[in-house]
Length: 222
Ligand code: CDP
Image (cartoon, rainbow, N blue to C red):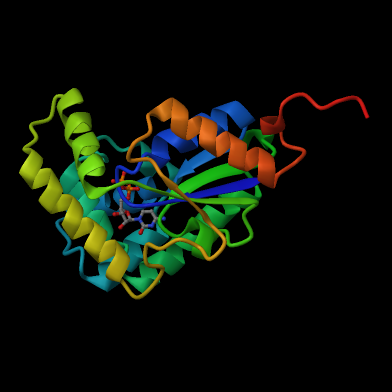
């Protein structure tokens, strides 16, 4: 079973993906971390993230160990990630890694949850369940602001709004794999929902789409 969760930043898709993976015993891949890891490598090397040749070279040698790099959640890394993510050759170089994870999830799990921007549209168009998780710009900015403060990082709300708008615009406007719902994705607007409500709604959708999944609850003997 493959569950594809796409959506803009701070829409709640990461939290939802983790909950779903745990509840359904599926592997989880946060594909944003792949772009962040690549961005971190380029920042560390002092390369220009818009230099497609350097980015493509770095994408080719990216390993799973890179996803463990410290500081990947930093805003500077997120912004740089969205610059390198717009380079078609970079996306192509990272596609196989993501598909391999979906088709052959680690630890012998029966499937995977992937979250990102183009999982339902490009990486796994055959996914069993596709959700586009979104929320109002205000709700997302408030969440990101709180997340930064909770992590002990300085944060100015107005700046968070600005940075989020810049990243959303870049992710939605790029030519290759832009942020948009897959034609058959269900839209889940989490603006007014807490984590539990989002999880419950997603579990209902999964159960409806995959009648034999554990999300359906215990099956009757016949
Ligand atoms: O955590 P947040 O939602 O803020 O960002 P992320 O999921 O970690 O993604 C960071 C950046 O990577 C995004 O702004 C996208 O530009 C890029 N990305 C992408 O292009 N495709 C994906 N499947 C995942 C992330």
